[in-house]
Image (cartoon, rainbow, N blue to C red):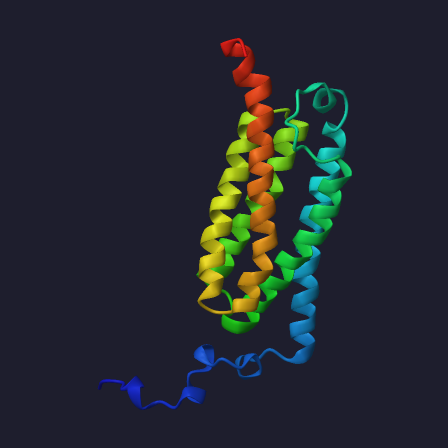
Length: 187
């Protein structure tokens, strides 16, 4: 016996229905999920602040810096703004399509964003910090593209974090250049 899915009505395909309430998400569970997504992202942001606070000591202050390096407090302001935006974006995608490839990409991008500050500030590794921030920016681009297919607002909420990641990649490359490459080539 062959099952003919083409005759099913859209509301019969529960996991493909665009309305989150048809998938079993009540307003209460949706709010709890939003709090979870925001909490996770704020936790990552606070962990990055803690890792960078350690590194903004003697080692970081001894580095030659590019001219476009912002004051240290700008990192805190950026993280406390950008991570909640990313959390809302993840929540919007979860509400729209549930656990899915775009949400997994979002998680990997969040992990890369969580790892570069400890690599740079705690381990004092300019090279590893640069590799991780570039990985995060690349994953951010892929995630943005995946989100755009499902929710334009969710994709738009990722744009500021992606722009910041590009800026930070330029900063870390500048630090790497002035402190690792230039001294080796006599510049």
